[in-house]
Length: 328
Ligand code: KG4
Ligand code: ZN
Image 1 (cartoon, rainbow, N blue to C red):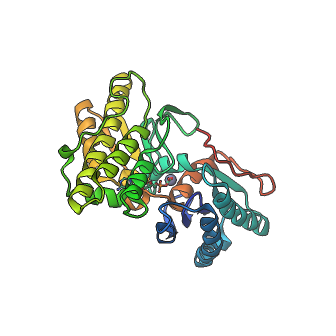
Image 2: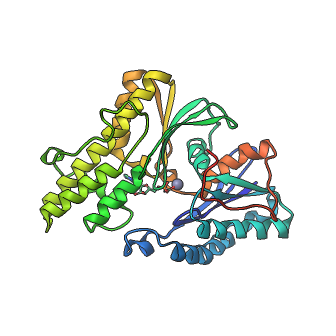
């Protein structure tokens, strides 16, 4: 069995996975969202202190499995250094106390593996990763060969939802709040620019939409409920249309048979619907992670770790480091 730990941002999570059967034996997560909500975003120092309180509680709950572990896996990149360190410190302690090898896990690769929790690994796959920190398309040929095909030049998809919510005073995280509001709004009331619409560039950009939202908020303040919903709807439609336009270009070139969307923002129903249509148009099969595994969790870290364990990709407790950068 592998015990896995996730602390790259504002979720503390621990899981235990059976290596041979891939069964998820234990999985718990404590989200810090409500603690950060009043600041409109994640406060790193607060997040770090909360991980230091919550991770040991989760480890305590995993006690029935602690004597049967063969490895401990931990997210060590990318993310906030001060929060990654909390998970890594716990992994180091376990590794030294029990003589276990450590599997260092890249958070973005773990998101890709959220597709395979309690399932077989299935590659090749073209993967759109949309989260709070990243927006990218990755051509995943195998465990060893993952190539970034497109990424964002500025803000990420999820971050643009968070900032839109913050500008309208709606709280954090913005994704689910803006999605719910958008469902009641009229996207046609406001003109929203589609980023890089006339550019041949295969890349994403969300700073332009963010500015457009800021101008609308300023021009219509104080905002009434209908205007908030209409801004949310116009914003969400443009944000998704931009994803679609760029992914369509990638589809035309790569003609993927299997396409997946992962990351916290892949829980968005309007995104899912839009890509059902795009995949239908190109005859590609759309793969999505179970809703409970879209946002950050240790189950996906453990699932990645099984494939790493098979390859004996181990780190040492004394030399493992954290990094703000992904390996991708
Ligand atoms: O993957 P994740 O849990 O953490 C990171 O690795 O960043 O993603 C969190 C991000 C946040 O920006 C959040 O607002 C966004 O995912 N998100 C959504 C939705 N649910 C979460 N964005 C749009 N629509 C949603 N329903
Ligand atoms: Zn994430």
